Image (cartoon, rainbow, N blue to C red; front, side):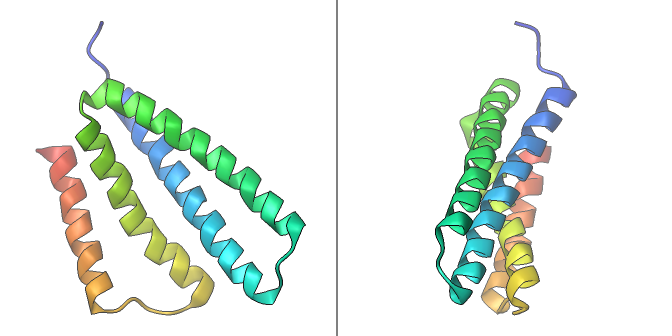
Length: 119
């Protein structure tokens, strides 16, 4: 098999980023909306979004393992994306700033992602 291109790695990371972002958006927006009222239509909308997000995650993992040749690289990318995206989405919905520990986690998570991609 030919060596995977940078483009394949890029597509894998984009699929993971979109999948993680949509998953987090669905979770946090459902939490915010459920404060107002619990309703079935909202649940099904979020469920459909989660299905689409899950498909993107599966594609990202499949392309990632193929292009990076390591499940650990793909796992670190996925986990770090969650670490970076969730506070941004949470703040956009709830307007509450992260604490010191969360901020340090973001900094170290970002450093870990860079080390994984570069080293």
